Length: 509
Image (tube, rainbow, N blue to C red):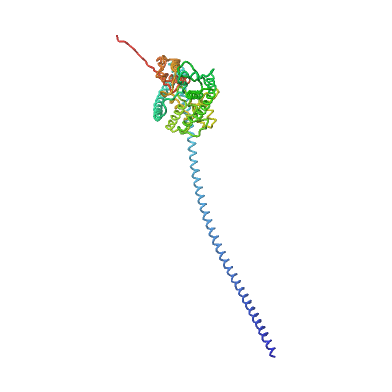
């Protein structure tokens, strides 16, 4: 009994607990369902309310936009009406102007008819006057026209010549003053050698006995020396002196130095001669390069090819009218650089072109080209600037100068060659040049006498007064100067002066 009771009581409690729990769950479920239904109804009501608000707001916005469009349409309609009124007013104004233009055209037509009739009437009167003038003057219209034109032409030519003379005088005055200032300033700044050494072609001997030793047994010593150096050794009756002759100054210098060393050493035989000549040849080659390098360094120039430096160095042994060509080239480079500085041109191009202008004289060549053409080819070979090549080719007017620097090289070359003490000129060449100057002037018509004065720097010409007028004298002066430029070669410049004067002589008895 007790056992049954102990078992049934827990079971009854457990069943009661599960029943209460199930009833509580059902209650909560029913409550949740009611809450969900309530929430759904509230949400539907809220959505309906928002829908109504959105519809009301959209209607208001639509009404506002429609009102705005209606206002814009009214404004555009009013603006179009204003444009229409303006167009109508312009059309009315154009109609009025068109009517006025038609009236003006009619008046112009009437005036043109009246002018045409007047022109016809005047043409008839002019023809009658012309016939009457031809009858009175005895000249036709064409003849009178030619006379008038000829008179006007002569008058215009005279006036033009006066103006041209005035302009030329002013230009010449200004140009001469400015060029004189530039050249004087340049020459004042120039500091270079006034004289240059000429190559020595004679060797002094300690005694006449040395001549026999130089000749050697059966002439073997002198033949060896001449064969190795390519010179002619002239041994004559001149006391204690031997003359060396050769067209190549470098070979002549090698022979001179070698012979001096042999004389000093005293051992003169073929083997010794060959040894000394080879040693002197190497020394002269080194000296040639050093002389060229020294000039390039003194001028502050750079980027010279070794062959160019060597060709420049060979100019050290070349002379032209007694002027050392290397020193002359250096002097021309200095003058050209100063002129370029005064004129604001390229100093580097001017100095380089001036230094290389006689480059061809230092190049060994068997061609018939002159030194300017040889120098041009060599400069082009080593990639020099085209302006420098032109300066080399044009310094004797073989080609036309293409840049101002080329003209400066010509001027500097003339200054260096023409300055006092720079060059020697033989008496025959000097006299011949003066005679050529006078002959050129006397070859022109109207020239009575011509005199070359101031060592050929000025040519004074006396002309016939009856054959040459004042204007003709100026033209004649230009023609003679042009003829001298084309036919003669001369350093510097030559002044041509024409003297035209009328002398009237009467004696009081």
